[in-house]
Length: 581
Image (tube, rainbow, N blue to C red; front, top):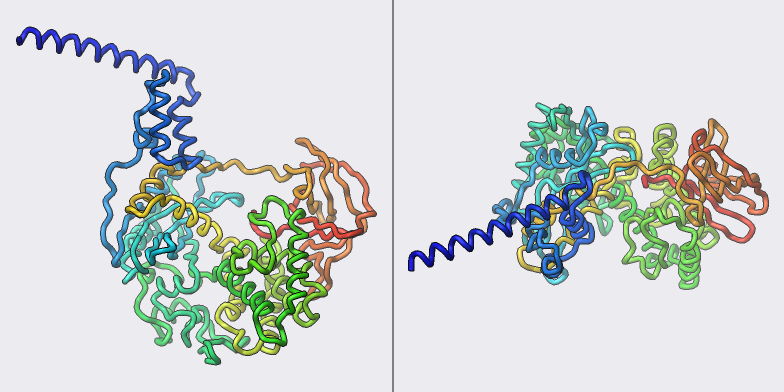
């Protein structure tokens, strides 16, 4: 009996070694092409990029293994290297997981060519709540970090994730991030033998989240403004009527809590050697686009009788917006929608209306007084959002915003001057500190928030699901090759403003190659508007479509700026795209 068992064991081991040798041979043959990716690597990349569910991949792997691909893993977890065990802890009354700043940056730089390594690494952080399910109050509270590598890309990654039935009960969930950031600012960071100095660029939050992490009163409080000491005035809601002679808050006054009515407690961020006022800029995505611009539109649609638009006027504006859909380039995330869907508009749509389409669709529909008032805001934000104009014309934009806030009382009443409108007066200080509005906007963070929401596939352990998806994906989706300036030659993506020295041309590209392009150059170029300033400053023009000529331009010797080209009858409205693409 023992001899039979020994013989059986010997034959079994012989077959096992033969199978193992066969697997090794297959693997070696599949990987013998050097840099050519294996089937597993290609499949893994596709599963991650297409966000395919694990059970679907398991079925596919089973089929492939039965048809000659025995070298492939049996499960999706093995294919994408999913963590088996994820340990979370209870912090601030929520389930909490800390990825770490340094560990995440190290993973990031593994995907980056050393030529892109910066000498000084500037980090921006975002803290905000993210509802997950419509049927529950549960939400995520991620701490996100962004690193700017060049002017084309901004990389966002999570530093920590918290999940619970309500918002955090305390600010304890910030402690790990603050302690690690304090050490990095003091000692710097070494990645792959390359040393980098670390600086905090900014902490970008909407107004409620900013008040929470700074332990201050909400913006609806009497001393809710985190930029000045003005006391709010109650007229059905807290408003801020003063426009001039505002007393600015400073880092010293904040830390000493000289205005005690503004503070609840001491913020964890006070442990860092940062400016507690300047390092928390106004987020124009929430406060200008979703704040002031949305408030204006809702006032015109549902406000008082003296400023409310009629049904026919709303219909006219909506029809004009729909008529512009075919002229909006694909670099815009969304096409214009009607005012009937205003409650579903996203921040990018309000920005598009504020800077580009609103100038056209509101003209001769709004009263002259209301239109000129809107143009003050539109023109000022157009300057602040432009990387070049915000440096040279910041004072002009600030004076326009001061006029806008002052006239708002007369046109819409005192109750219009809520915190979001008041914060327009403080934009200039943040623009002078950080540059154009997109340098401290929350758009990149909100895009990543949308990814987090999509990582949740069922109601069981949402936090663990997101952690595993983040670890699987890593930074595999990054691409740091900059896009050429001139790439499109078909409408509506072929409009450009061409600049060379002080000469400006408005063109539509017809054909292009690596060195030159054939363009239709418009000769009779006039400003789109003259008030509140000449629109040539922001490259917005009104052009006679019949006066043009064909011309070949050298791509290497001129600067091409993308533009929106709207054709109406015999005229073209051409506006340079000012915001960060």
